[in-house]
Length: 310
Ligand code: PMP
Figure (cartoon, rainbow, N blue to C red):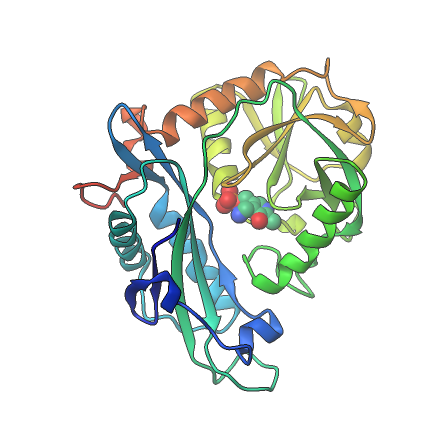
């Protein structure tokens, strides 16, 4: 159970971290957030947080889209998170949620001339079960929010109405998740994860201009695929019908980690098993996030009695 939150400038008991029903962001969806994972390495008795400073960089970028003025550097927010996690003392995997919100309790829709606040809390995340089979997905009947309406590259609370519509439609129709197309009809991403597919040995993913969230896991996997796995990595628009012809596909994200996709719109991909490239990417990713790859030590921050990695 969560015991603490960073709230109104200090680490406090979680019961004290409360906002009013009159809160601006609760009413208008004008906040932004982040999502980080802490991985508990039992052999080392150590909790590792993956790419903590990079997550807070994106968090502050999202805040910028909201005209939020937050008096923190990414390194300061990382430092607060380390302190919070030390107080919390998780000895299991955890999920960390930073949230920036408009703190005023007033009516009147806008982004400017409001007080911005940051809150951070963490929850237990449980151990990831290896999926022997990938997930079954459909193409959503919803379209991804467009940059001309709500910027998808920011992790904005209001934009998750779009993700929620996509996820619930898919789940209530019996699928595990959905792939959502953008206004141009190209593949954008999953409800809350980026999309990658393998065709003819190359790893293909939509570019940042296709109304996707600029995922940190996406960036990580693109680098690992090119530099460690010697794969050709291609950023280009993907048509819906190409999904059906992919040899392999997977979602990637902090929450999704590396989630293989077995089937899209009732078409099995490859032989329906987790493909060899997906497996390679997944194994490498997990060994890094658990702090088992010293070469990638700069991507993980050890929470207990260690300096904060940048
Ligand atoms: N797209 C969306 C819509 C998401 O919510 C997420 C999860 N943050 C991602 C992609 C993956 O981003 P990341 O790898 O930075 O967690």
